[in-house]
Amino acid sequence: MDSRNPLYLLYRQVRGAFAFGWLNGVIAAKRNPLWVISYLVAPLSFFILVRIFAREEMLGFALVGGMLMTVAANGVGIMGDAVFYKSTIKLQDMMVASPMTPLAYLFGLVLSGLFFALPGLVLFGVLMAGYGLLNANNILVLALASLTSLVSLSGLGFTLATFVREERFLWPLLSILTFLLTVLPPVYYPSTLLSEPLQVAAVLVPTSNAAMIFHKHAGLLEALPISEPLVWTIGLLEAAVFQALAMYRSRWREV
Image (cartoon, rainbow, N blue to C red; front, side, top):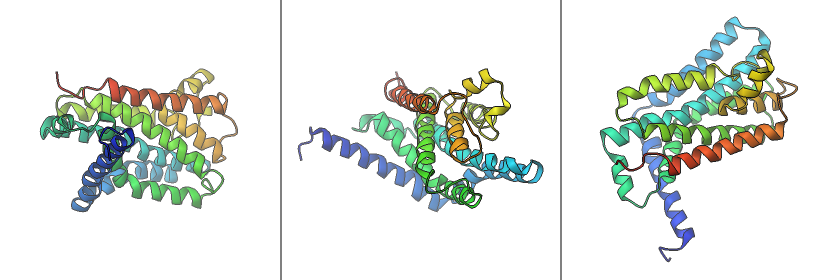
């Protein structure tokens, strides 16, 4: 096949991303299963606390929050690998010298994170189905909302990671991002608890954007603060913008 054929070039990028995802995800998980458990700790902790102390009607929001916290951990969590590979073992320099593009490298990092997060996503999916929140009528909508949030957060996380020079500067940033993306906005609680201006502002956060769609289609909320097509449009635009930032504005090559 002609090496200049666009389809062949795309195939090479996708193949490289899957190979990197397998190496950094499945093989790494086999060597250290604790990484799989670590993706479950925070979401399950919030769920258990809500189950014990909150009203019964809040349990559905805790399950949605657990699912989206797992998605968010996968999205911004790639920052850890990205900084480690860039600063410590210089793997990113090898990728820069190879035909792999930043987008393919990012895709490989996301895939590796998904391998770690998959047990958590399955667990919360089963729990949501058991509580009647997930069914054949809404599973595709909820999957698309999760994917949109993941694409946005992975683009954001990768772009930020390329500007972090040392791993020790990363950990406070990750903690702050996790709080801003999964605890502060209406992910674990209904957006109706906020004032109307804050409800509209929350639509701009990728996790709460997806959470509002979850809440409505799971029957937890009757209406969204703005029209649902507009919520989807904002989420999709954010995904495109953050991926464009990762592709064209990340510090892929050291200057």
